[in-house]
Picture 1 (tube, one colour):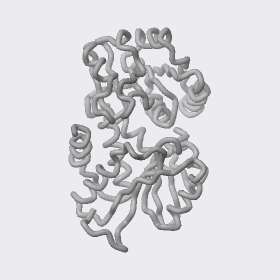
Picture 2: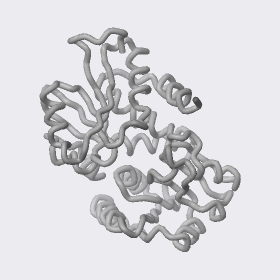
Picture 3: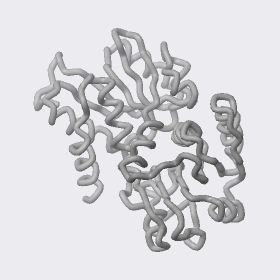
Picture 4: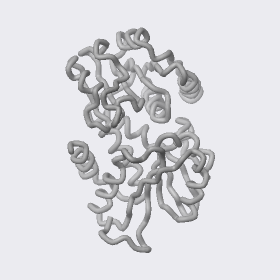
Length: 288
């Protein structure tokens, strides 16, 4: 990003509700500035009832790209012109690219998740995985796990158990695999953890400002687990802190945040993203 925004500046951004907590503007604007690109990234708070208008506004204002976050990742798909095949399988979009008025939806969460694991030399093929949550991020992660032929167990809150059922149906339809689903209770958590090698929190539990919350009671955590928390704010969630105390291997949400952001950045700019700059910018802000 240049210091002066002009009529030539290309606009990208984020739509969601809320957006006050997001690190994406800091991360992307630092990346634009590093590469000397005349781009700017802005957050837009969009209520669900205004989503169609927001997408129409993207086209009308010639906004080059948008990230999509809660609660719009699924519902936004109906307003786009094209959906990438992977995003179609996932059933959720987190990135939109505007090519001369044609809006295409992608999902960079899936690749971002896999890259975050690969950076830690963790392979998930045939591994037993306990996935907590069944929302938009969980859908992307579930497809990544299925693609790598992991054995998947999904637990979700009782009032949203239908989401887990839909995810199971989707993974069976596209990948021909059967997954176990259940209600998120301490009893099911204990059973799932006893059988798991990798545990993934794909919910927003523990995210700032609710930093004292955790999806997993500390007494259930153990040293033979690898625990991945998609929450990146705070950098070390209560789940990760208690997992480390239990001797488990941990992966924070910043790694996935940066990778999914980098993939979106490259779709908007057609340039390689400065990963190190993006990562250090986010970590520096979180450390404050």
